[in-house]
Amino acid sequence: MVTREPQLKRQVGLATAVAVIIGQVIGIGIFLVPAGMARAVGSPFWLLLIWLAIGFMTLCGALCYAELAARFPEAGGSYIYLREAYGNGVAFLYGWMVLLVLDPGLTAIFAVGLASYAGFLLPLSPAGSHALAIVTVLVIGLVTVLGTRVGTGFIRALTALKIGTLAFIIVFGFASGRGEIDNFRPFVTVPQDIFGALAGGIVGAFFAFAGWWEVTRMAGELRDPQRDIPRMLVLGVLALTIAYISTSAVFMYLVPLESAATDEAFAALAGEALFGPGGGAVFASIVIVSVVGTLFAYLTVSPRVYYAMAQDGLFFRSVGQPHARFGTPHRATMIQMVLASVLILTGTFDQILSYFFFVVVCFIALTVGGMFILRRRPFTGYRTPLYPLTPIVFLVLSVIVLFLVGMRNPVETLVGVGVVSLGIPVYRLFKLKKGSL
Image (cartoon, rainbow, N blue to C red):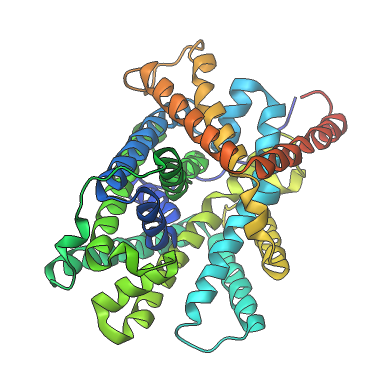
């Protein structure tokens, strides 16, 4: 029997939870992904269709996660749901992946992205850029350690600023008349390689929405999880879908697709169209604000998985102890800070993360699939609408995404599966050390 450590305080409300999901998902990608997707599919119609399809898929997944989080309102998110549906072994493999690769890798990517955009505002050497990235991770991480209310306060403010800035870009972009409506013509074309075009667009859109499930890691800190979890996921996903469609539309209005060879060039041209010759610096400032908000969200919610693993005896026991004064998972947060800093110094995170996209989708699909097992247990709280259709739709679309990713990156897919499998002997070591779990 595993002895539980003291639990985290329930002090997070609905508005903060919605801010976390928006703040975490909307990062640099909203300024870069639409360009790559638009070039892949070749016309506004297919771009709109893909955004709506992946938004609908995400909503189905969010409704399923809402029931899972309502059933198990504990810190840890997917780790908890996998544990309850499939046992400690599968849950550990998920925790193993996010601990060593996914969370520190994404943290490193966002921090380095922030530093690269800071280079538009002040001269930075490669060493200075790395130093800025590491300092950013350490400072934001320490702020989140000082208290959940402190960290989430920053998230609320930065998310409000982020949404306000995006709204300004969208409204001003169309109202200024600085674009061309002809950029949307022809509205519908059929790409020569429609399979490859849709594959690139779907994978890009799924990546843009990736992370919506992470906010459930904070379920153990929500004041009223039964009521707030469904609301925060639905509101968050709807806001994300609207933001991505609107931003894609205004960027296409401002910049013809054929005039930009890369995603970065496309975003820079949009900035110049909006703000003139100094648009690069203004746009860089907007991106920096967006990424800071994303880093706050990641460093707030991600450590809850390692905390939950430690509470189950599947990680070092001390990591499962909240800070005596601040009530935060401080040791788990520091682990993520240190690993992200190491990845920033080595500069290998982009390549490393490319190996794990397939595995991440597998775990999320497994989590939603766990509903069919957990529905056998009595529960009187929130239930997913239109069950079993809702999880089936999500799982079918997830299989399509998995197929597309596996076909495009077979070597990376196999390597990612292999690395995650290395967690099996590590799990057995913890199991032997802690006894039967």
